[in-house]
Image (cartoon, rainbow, N blue to C red; front, side, top):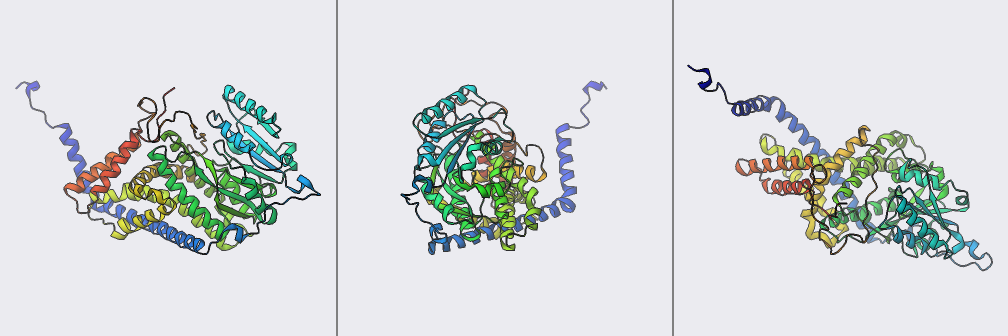
Length: 527
């Protein structure tokens, strides 16, 4: 018989699929089932930790609102009055720092808002710290500062010959100038922040009349929250942070993380804490923790809002979330022992900072959101021997979601979209968290969040520019892979499962697919 006409001994596809089935059957009972049970148990513990944290915060904020515990009642606050004899010398000297980097669209707004602050002209110094690498933009900012200087504003335009330390390096270098020595307080505003004229009148009295206070933090107000669905989702997450987390930290422990902008520091507190450090990508949080360990108290003024801009492109938001997730985890790694050994603060405050502020909010919340709801729970569909109790699969996540929604009541109807979007972003936050904990890879990566100002904006919710999809730029393979995994689990549950997770799995897989092709946020024309 002709060898070429002989039938094949085996079919490659059938052989591979048979091998996969064999491996699955052999590993299922001794390995996969026990491992999945352990993962479910660990995730349930983390879910319970997050649930208790959210419920506790909810109870505390309820009583804060019920008792109307405003910072003006908790601390001494008196409006700054005129002193005929002392004149303007009765007012403390205030430095206003605006760190910048290539912000072409928003620099005029921020410089103009800072120069418009109402305070005695001879008792305020505006300091523009420009790290721009674009020479054209740098020249525009210099001209803008000169324009305000010609109007009698005491404004300083400062540049460096390198970007060492990024924002922390710029702020640290700015504090070295001789004229800063005459200042008592420093207000900091990022390049897209626009304080109201009365900002200093409302914050400085806390510092003047309460020598134990080192920081006064204002709330962020988002000028572009209605631009697209992604900015609405961000608003919901950040509003919870400002409405609950910051408020509770201020009212109960006099500690919260400095937001890096829209705040006023007592310069002596800043210096005592060791000044700005660039060892992590959250130099603001680093400074706040160190100052707190020195015994300084912080005040959060929730009804004082400063206009700012949310990142409206998916690329910018991903970079921002990487920095905001990686930095705290890395800082926790660096400071946990120092916090425990500190003798200036109470054991209760140390527990709050280590467990609540860092571990639950900055680590557990990210990990459990992605690992449990996007990996482990879907896997139980394929392994019916492992079950997730209803309280862990339904009651806890629903309660946590409702508690998160209190910050933005106007967006209650978007809760489902918010959950799906947060689960997608939890993928990046989890990855960034482990990078920070292990101090690996992109641990110190700093990409300035792109701000659009009024550029490219036409109507809210509309995509701008022609949609262009480029492999590696707009297509995100990891999201697509997770979406495919969830879709397969959903199909299996619909056909053979008993969990009835398929509706959630299909919706979540769709969310990952949408993010995977980059069809999220505002689109701008490719340059």
